[in-house]
Amino acid sequence: MSELLLHNAAFLTLNERQPHAEALLIRAGRVAAVGSLADVQAQAAPGSERRDLGGSVVTPGLNDAHIHVWKVGQLRTTSLDLRGLTDLPELYRRVAERAAALSPGDWLVGRGWNEALLGGEGPTRRGLDEVSPQNPVLLTRTCAHIHAVNSPALEAARITSGTPAPGGGEIQFAAGLLYETAFGLVTRAMPTPDAAQYERWISAGLTYLASLGLTSVTDPAVDPPLYAAYRALDARGELPIRVNLLYMRRPDGGADTYPLPEMYVSDRLRCDSVKFFTDGGLSGATAALAVPYRNTPEPTRGMLRFEDADLYALAEEAHVANWRIGAHAIGDRALDQLLKVYERLERTHPGGKRHRIEHFGLPDAEHLRRAADLGIHAVPQAIFLHELRGNFARYLPPDYWARTYPLRSMLDAGLNVALSSDGPVVREVRPLVGLQAAVQEPMVPGQQLTALEALRAYTLGGARAQGDHDNLGTLESGKWADLSVLSADPLTHARPGEIEVRASYVAGVETESKIGVSAS
Image (cartoon, rainbow, N blue to C red; front, side, top):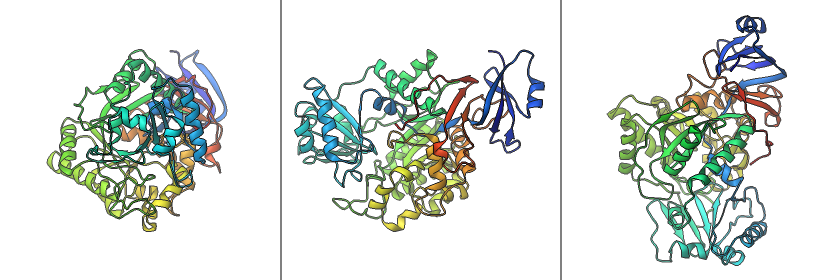
C-alpha cells in the first residue's frame, strides 16, 4: 500500500503532547507522522497519495466498548425488532404478521419490548398464544434478562407448572415469563444455528457498525460457536473493523461451564478476556439491589447469578491463566460481590491483567474507591440515560438516582471509563449520540462529562479497557491509522449526536460500509 497523506482537516489527536494537527501521514496501515501540513509533507515520500478532507474534523477511530455485535446483526436480518414500540396491540400485530409468514412449528424470535413504554405491561403467554397458536414464540425484553414465551414454546422446552427454576433464575409459568438463567431452558429446545448463520449475523452487525464511524468494538458475550465464527471470518479477511471478544465461561441461561479457550490476537480480532454475569438488568428490575425495587408486581431486590465461592473459583482460574475478566455487575449487591472477588484475586495472585466491570450501574463512593484501588476499567452506558431513564425512575428508590451511572464520579475516582451502547439493549447505538448523552443527560445534575472526556471514553478508554492502547485510541506515530471523519467538531457542537459521519478508516483504508446511519 502506498503512503496516504490526509489534509485540510482539524485532527483531534487526543494525544496530550500534541492535541491538534493539520495533517496526517499513513504508511503501512499506521500513522507515520501527524502535525502541521509542512512537517507532515516533509516526511512523505515523493508520489504519496494526497487526500483533501474538505474541512472535516478527524478523531481517533470511535470505539464501542460493549456491544453485542451478532445480536445487532440478528435484528437486521432474521429477528423481529420490537424496540421503541409504545403500543402493546401493535406488538401483538407484528408477532401475528411474522407468525403468518412462518411454517407451523417454526420458532418466532424477537427482542426489544419494554413494559415502561407499553403502558406498564409487556407481552404475556395468553396474548402470544392468541396471535401465534402454531409457532413457539420467544420475545426477549430490551434488557435481555427477561423473556416472554407462549404455550408452544413452553411445551417444546418441556416446562410445566412444576418445573423448578435453575439457580439464579425464575419461572412465572402462568404469565409465560422467564427470568435470567431460566432462559436456558428454552434455548436448549430451539434449533442450533449453524456456522454460516452465525457468520451472517456477525457480518451484518459489523457492516452496520462500520457505517456509524466505529472502527473497533467489543462483543461482550461470545460462546464457542460464535468464537469459531469470528475466527473463520478473520482467517478469510472479512472483518471490516477490529473486534475484541469477551468469552463466556458459563452460557447465558445455562449451568455448564465452558473451558478456557485458546487466546487469540490478530490485527483485527482479539480474545484474551472472559465474561461473567453476576446479576440482572436495571431497566427490568432484576439487577441485585440491597433494598427492594419500587413499582414491581411482586417485591424484589433482583437476582445474583452466582454463589460467592463459585464465582471466585471461575474467576481465579481465568486470572491465574492471565485472562482479563469482564464481569457484568449493575446493582450494589452485585458490585459488592464482584469487588470482593477482584480484591481476593489481587491479594492471593497479585499482578496480571487489570479487570473490567461491565455496566457499573449503581456504585457508591466506596465501590468507586475500591475499584480505583484495583485499577478496574469501568464500562458504563451513557445512552441508557437517554433511552431507559423512565425505567430507572420507575423502579429505583429516589435515593439511588444520584448513583445511577455516575460518570463524573467514576472519572473523579480515577477510573478508566470506556463508554459503550450495549446494543441492541437500546435502539440507539450511534456513538455520537452516546457522547451527547454523557455530556447533556446525566441522571442527576453534576454527573455529566465534558465533551473531551466523553470523546476520550469513546476512543482511548475502550482501547485501554481491552489492553490495546499501544495501538489504538489516539492519533500518534506508530499507532494504527484508525480514524473517524466527522462533519463538525464534537467538542464544540451543541448537538453532537446530529453530526454526520463522513468516513472512517481502518489501518489507513476507508471502510466501504455506507448503509445509512438511522438507529438500530
